[in-house]
Amino acid sequence: MKVAGIIAEYNPFHNGHKYHLEKARECTDADYCVVIMSGNFTQRGECAVIDKYARAEMALACGADLVLELPVCYASASAPYFALGAVSILDSLGVVDELVFGSECGDTAFLETAARILAKEPDAYTAFLKSNLKSGLSYPAAQSKALFDYISQSYSGIPAASPFAEPLSGGLFSSSNDILGIEYCKSLLLRKSAVRPHAILRSGSRYTDDTLARQTTDSSSAKPSVKDSSAPVSGSETANAHSSALAVRTALRSGSLADIASHVPESALRLMQDAYGKTFPVFPHMLSSMLHYKLLSEAECGFTDYLDVSRELSDRICNRLPDYTDFPSFCMLLKTKELTYTRISRSLLHILLNIRNSDIDLYSQFNHAAYARILGFRKESAGLLTAVKANASIPMISKLADAERYLEGAPLMQLRQDTRAAHLYNAFIMQQYKTKLPPEARRQIIRFP
Image: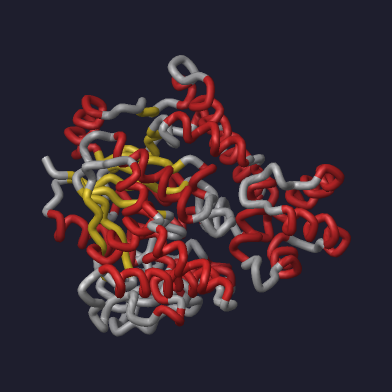
């Protein structure tokens, strides 16, 4: 039995994700595919546009065999912690052979080389990095040039097409998927894992593209407006231009399900249509009131105890709090050359969700992710579940209510943190759509089909 692993957000699931699943099976000759997926909050510091159960079902419908939830403390964290949490789950399952991830460069060997250097931080590399930072380069550019200089000095040569070829442009560290790819490789190295990394060249739009890619396939089916979301919508699974998840979310924000019809698989589109105006879409501004109250409540004490919140950012939050209007605009208000929008958004989300530095320190003592929570699986893939249960070094959670009987201490604290985050997400939905979702303990895992 051969198993491929994927780490994803699927926010929301689109044609590029389906392509990734198909290529993961093809290039690894895998019998099964396990996905570690973010829950209701994402690494950009935002709420997922559609809930985790719907996204898990989309993934299962498009080829995944088992979907497990990445705990929220890692799902909403910066690349190193995001990778550590997800890789720790995949590695602990005891059955995964390869971790397959999208990459702007598509060069596994170079990503592994970068990961080894960053994991060991040799003196020569550190000297290059410090020198570059002193010269005024931004950290990504300084890091990329340091890698370029170190590899040029230590290896036989750098191919012109490699991601290290243009160090001053930011190179490897200006490409979000390559950044994550390096962190995946580094996490595997630090864990001395037998799981092998496998980069797939990213197809279609860049991660940061916020406009839908032009499609070459023609769809003659009627496309309803938001006001007529009950009408049939036809999606396309053959289009060769993959839009980014950001572009799909941006199109949804403009108010049309029809606009994204050819950019998502048919099965995913049907689930979105069923949820439209009931629990979907969910956007960051819906967090605004709860975040504002949280910030007002704790401003006197500051926010440096929370993950990713520096003293500088804490002071800026306190000083600019009288100007708060909503979550997205507050992120823009706090933004500086050193503090990016995503860093600020992530930090504010950590404050809202009560994710502290001490939490990550504690979880690191327990393998980072101390359990694997099942969101859904394919019924025909029962053999995979049997193998996981026989080989995993961490407990598999299928019923939240039962978990309290065998989890305690930090693992139980981590699970309860996930539960609170899910209930908060449900509260956003209730506030926006007046739809009351069942509490997390009563949610059933997806058994597909």
